[in-house]
Amino acid sequence: MRDPRLQKLAQNLVQYSIDVQPGENVLIDMIGSERELAKCLIEEVAKRGGRPFVETSDRSVLRTLLQNATKEGIEIWSELDLERMKRMQGYIAVRSGENVNALSDVPEPNMRLYEQLYRNPVHTEQRVKGTKWVVLRYPNASMAQLANMSTEAFENFYFDVCNLDYAKMEKAMQPLEDLMNRTDKVRIVSPGTDLTFSIKGIGAKKCAGHRNIPDGEVFTAPVRNSVNGKITYNAPSVYAGVTFQDISFTFQDGKIVQAESNNTARLNEILDMDEGSRHIGEFAIGFNPHILHPMNDILFDEKIAGSLHFTPGQAYEETDNGNRSSVHWDLVLIQRPDYGGGEIYFDDVLIRKNGLFVIPELEALNPDKLK
Image (cartoon, rainbow, N blue to C red; front, side, top):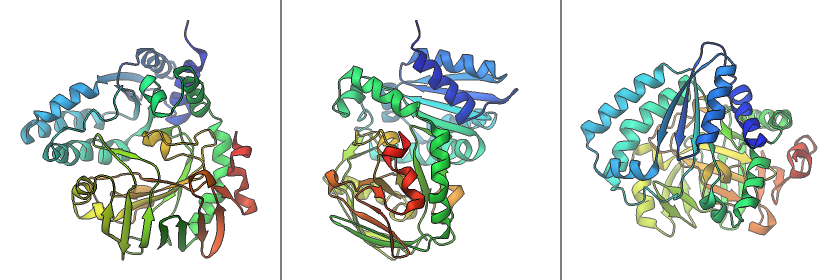
């Protein structure tokens, strides 16, 4: 018998997240081995009158493919998948797998070709800009281990997070989106962090389950050359299969002029990918009430209650500051007291302290109101 929570998740993805309409083509991209959810999604798309298409892949196979890739091979692969993506109106990605570091030993030049020749044209440009899309992780024993939970406890946590009342959250987000649209100067203060920048004229976008599951953030971007100071992130992050910890950036007039971590050499290789990867493409505030601790999975970690992320690389079209890059790397700073605390100021007014919103119009986004 199917878990009814699985059916509800599929319904939410198809009906709420991408709102499939009759006659639309929907690509269901299954990364890993979760078959039952794929079946649920196919059925739900068909019920709405859509046409489901399915792609299945595996991280270990992708690793071998990239290790042996050539420029010409990636270009043909990109051309074929780009043509398919152009025919899609909807896209649902379900990501599961046993090893978050599966791509860690792919040679850096090969990863660079993959990002620039495949990921950028097929996903960053066509899928993100040309389809209704949503991406989610699916739980497994590896994720439970990263979250320091039993598999059963993590499964319960997962469905609490992913089947949250996102329509309710969306209403509570509106005052924060409005405030960010009116704000000029932002200041972030935490241990190892004192950072200032402007978001004037960039605009803001609320995220309530229409693009990512789990969700719970409002994002914008800094004026490209306005960032000054230092930020120290306190959540680990996986990029191209490598786990980074204790990342810190020092900025001067918008550019990362110093970068350090537990793997400083590899960090700087990523930041030297292109000119835009040393500038910031996104600033976002996270507040999912069920997600409290990092688990090396950015779809969860960037939504942590009391967090923010400050992202080197490509800006989103909705909040475009002009930065262009093949990199988009969400890095997370948690400001709750158990992670050292911290404050966010908008135009010199304190709006969040130690992870809790402190002005009346934003208090509906605090965990006790969203659960």
